[in-house]
Image (cartoon, rainbow over the protein chains, first blue to last red):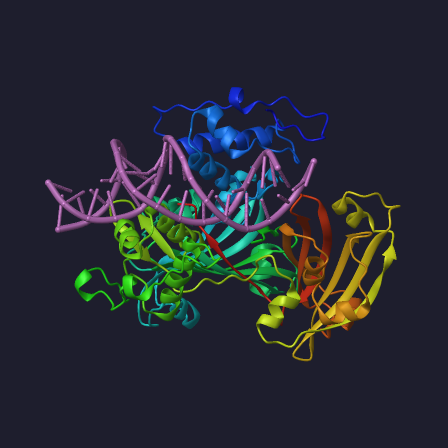
Length: 259
Length: 259
DNA sequence: AAGTGGTCTAGACCACCTC
DNA sequence: AGGTGGTCTAGACCACTTG
């Protein structure tokens, strides 16, 4: 019945007893199941290497159909937490997912890190865009765009200089809006559904102006990131060109294979 | 903006006539359907903004069940090519996916770009690891690991200095192996299933040694990338710490939202 | 009100892995 | 040879969006 591998110190975690589903809840059944398995993995009740019960058994024990169970486990596979092997079973391979560098703003990232971000607004007005920004937004250099320039601080130190260009009419933030909240937060609040972003990460040495803004010596190495953000209709909602102090900031990400 | 919203001006692309499925093929039906829709999107037959037929109709026209069609479209949603909206339909939002920065080696990336990569092997032997590498691999500093050090060139110019540490016994490449093929290629050929990698991207200025190796002036900005790679069992198969010429190389990636 | 995707069921056969 | 995931069918009801 209970498939226990030769890991003798298998934790006592009986899915039939630990997972409960509520058919009246508006939360989809597959999601309820996935969440509870994920929690068991994160808590260590299902350690790395542990095998899940097979899909048929799991379905029977929970009173659900196999496709529903498959959908639940499938979402964990997508997250990279477990792997399925035909004929062999489903095993836990990670107990947490590092999800940095998702579609979130620097402000959100720093807030999550409890780094007390603050923002100084240098520019917040409609202007004609520089050639590079016009090209990225698919506009002409005569069109007006919202030009934003900010310096982001965390823990009392400057971290990055952020320059953004947005199509006119999308947003009209006050300086206070920009001080308190990240650009992505403001866009979401304005009803924009962020869908995807193309980023290019590079490096170069600081100009005198950047060095002064970021409290670095001239010639210090800076990380650069340029980004084009699309909404759910495929329209371009933002072009940004940012520089980060390499001594204070790195990009962390995890990649997953397709095999 | 080429948004087609009315069926009347729908492009001439009839899925019933353009998509064919072969029930005898070993290729899954959902995959056959997904590939052909993806091709239609890439070719422009289904432009950005176009709406797909609804799932029931598509299923009926192709003689397949709705879950199979859903699985096909679902894979396109995962790739970010189309979006589904309940009550509204499924629309094309992108016509290509930039898939750089996936789980592939620099060698593969450069080969794909037709950049004629070549490699100079500086170190290829078993050694005790530096503290940082030992910690990343979960080994002690007394354990032997395979130490690799290479300089990658493309288009006749140096691009990056690559330093890798692998658990002993996993691989025993000759210098020729390393010259001709990327590390990930060698690992796959050795039967290792690459599953995920954690990367940290940063920047710093070049040391004299790096400057000489990479043909850059001392003090030039370099991109740095550290990576820990796991196989499908969760075991660590590689730790790498690499430096790239910022004047010749950037990291491109696209991020997708969860909404 | 009609159309469409979101979820779910209860089966089935096959391919692959392990024993 | 038996167990397991991979794929597929033919339905069903619901929630949301749009005209």
